[in-house]
Image 1 (cartoon, rainbow, N blue to C red):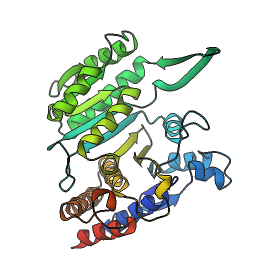
Image 2 (image 1 turned 60 degrees about the vertical axis):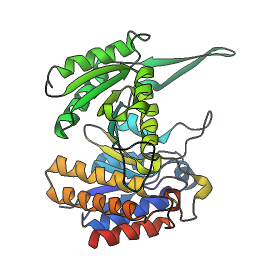
Image 3 (image 1 turned 180 degrees about the horizontal axis):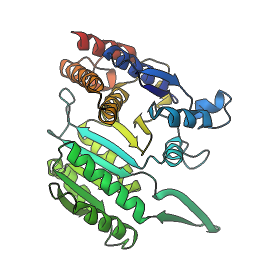
Image 4 (image 1 turned 180 degrees about the vertical axis):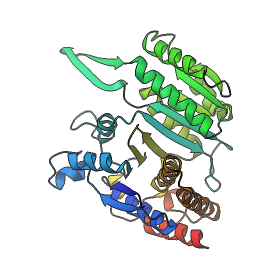
Amino acid sequence: MPYTCVLIPGDGIGPEVAHAAQKVVDASGAGLEWVERPAGASAVTQGHGSVLPEVTVDSIRDHGIALKGPCTTPIGKGYTSVNVALRKKLDLYGAVRPVRSLAGVPTRFEHVDVVVVRENTEGLYSGIENEITAGVVTSLKVATERACSRIAEFAFHFARERKRRKVTVFHKANIMKLSDGMFINSSRAVHEAYPDIEYEERIIDAGCMRLVQAPEDFDIILCENLYGDVLSDLCAGLVGGLGVTPGANYGVQQSVFEAVHGSAPDIAGQGVANPLALIMSSVMMLNHLHRKHDDQKCADCAKRIRDAYDRCLREGATTRDLGGELSTDGFADALIERMSG
């Protein structure tokens, strides 16, 4: 029975990269069925009255998976983040950002292979802010033992399932003794059930310094919401940027796989955007379907796509942001050619 994926094109370059990724997944032989749903500023202009229409949320609930292009979020004003709203509505508590060095994408570092696991529902991103008086604003950081334990269990289970060696918790419990203290205490407690996984803790500022000195010291980095947002982009910078890193948000029932880069409205419609990040996210989606349903076909298709884009990068068949000359669709076609070749 084929799986149905909700495709959310998003804003700016989103429709271009989303449909390129869809074309690649279809060419892999995965046999997915697709239902397209709106989100972001484009949903408002299309007359849905919201940046996250209920029809989109309901479709993800019904089908369990979504592949999402980038959505624009205004800075300092306007509507709230579509990404944050999706995570809250669907309880997508576990964000995963794998970061690895890629042949053909030269950087200052080699052999980087890090996974950032981020708690996705609490912390300062709870968005609880108040203006106490003119010129005085407070922002409330929320932490619950349930969420701290849940993300720790997710990270250690992820490590064991994927045969990773170590989980490192980044925190600031020396200052935020209650909230971050709860986070590391929960992680320590969960680690007791995973003696095969090495465990360590690092204060986040010192940890970031070490990360850019010796990224090979790290395997899985576990952190709360705000820290994970910052760290995942920092790690992306070690391997070439957000254009070469995928992302996923996991919940108990639903999961959303997404491009983590922006909507780049300045190049929208020109056919020059790099679809690689969303294609990489689609590989994560296929592997998720393999693990969830014990479907080897999905795993085979995921490997076929990954091997093909690795080959594209090695051979210089890339978009202009990576030094090549291919268009968005041209890259998808080059990847498909290498899947069949």
